[in-house]
Length: 338
Image (cartoon, rainbow, N blue to C red; front, side, top):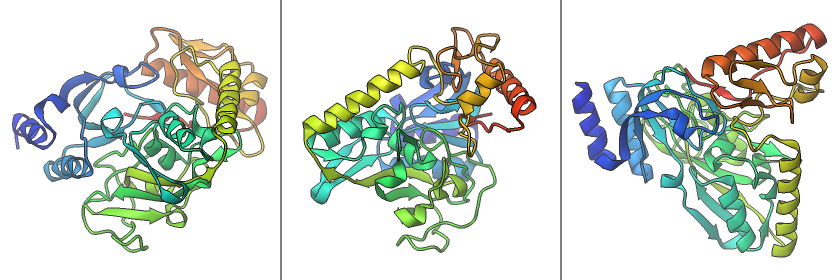
């Protein structure tokens, strides 16, 4: 199939106005870094997501899934193939009986927290300031301030790509087509067997196998489509007070005024990444336009003209110096694309 014919197939699936050719990824990531995606595609339904992924796999075209791009470093040279964006185009939030809230993968954590607040439901306040989507939170088991996604999630609805070639992660869910992945997945009833090719499956909380910044969806290349949360009744005033308190604490400690991808490194067991980076004398260190934040050493920020190469070089330098000073190896939390 020719490139032109493949693009026409994408346009037939989602509509011409929702297929963007050579779209700068810098405009779709919170780092404000990244070259052009060959195609950025904006599906609006589960069937469209499945059809786009199936079209990519059928044509041998690489694909990835992007949410708000809040945990992603996109390469300077851009990406070949299709970047499927699940954000405002795929962001419905529904409050259900019994304290349940169902959110599509592109819904922001803030929007879900606000919907829960309006319904007098508590439990998602911890995520209200996490700058990402529900899909990303499900994939990464996002957490903050003593809460994490797995504390409240009861099920996750996913697409199991036909060839199980995705490798999900990051801000929803950053699946990567044509990359080796596990052949194990849930069956259509949420069991533990292999899913039918291209099936949409539902995983219970136990089947999602959440760990620290990890999940079965990440490991097996499943594309998160939606999640259902179990929340608890509470006073809207009390919920709002907790959300405001967490927002103020985050703003006082984190460099929210500068482009970044959030916490750059995972927390090593028994340590805090920011403290180790300070101990190694790296706070304020820079490469090109990338800098270890002077406000919070756990963040690498874009001071204005950073490239992905700058960020990668700075990450490597911080890892080297921290290991030399403390013996601890820091592992990136930000998803490094390319």
